[in-house]
Amino acid sequence: MSALKLGVLVSGSGTNLQAIIDSIKSGKLRVSVEVVISSREDAFAIKRAKESGIEAVAICPEWFPSKAEYEEAMINKLREAKVELVVLAGFLKVLSPHFIRAFAGRIINIHPSLIPAFCGKGYYGLKVHKAVLEYGAKVTGATVHFADEGTDTGPIILQKAVEVRDDDTPEILSKRVLEVEHEILPEAIRLFAEKKLDVVGRRVFIKE
Ligand code: GRF
Image (cartoon, protein in one colour):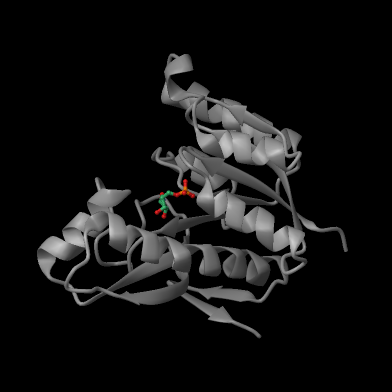
């Protein structure tokens, strides 16, 4: 059986992409990253991909007269690469129902909180951790979920908790959460690749 083909969408530093690449190199993850698409030309994630010999392109929304044309360009690129699973790894654009339907059940996202807490519109990057600290939460964490037509609302695949410490700043907390993201995202991809995820309504059962 040939290795599952991934398309990874990024917008920034690409540490989650790097975690996927490192898991492949270590043999833990038997998939192939066919293409990386960045919504920003200056994303360090592009450099990371190219250093690993992976095709990486910027497809930026501001280049297109409409969101539909922007998304069509990404869909075409992903289809050209015969992508079987789309991974949103630090991808900061909201995808339309049209895009979601184009890869129904084959898009996963990593979010830096324990969904349904601290997620949805406007919750990204350090804003998430700032909100966690301001609220006084004692536990936060990371979530990998299937993307659906909402924002951070699709069925949850994996979650892992991170303790909030009294002396945390958003930056310090984000680093501890990022470590957990780098564990659970490759693991969720492995489970998908090995067809061990059974989605029943909102619930995802793992058949290990
Ligand atoms: C991560 O916290 C991720 O959960 C969020 O964007 C942040 C940066 O990700 N979506 P990366 O370093 O670009 O992978």
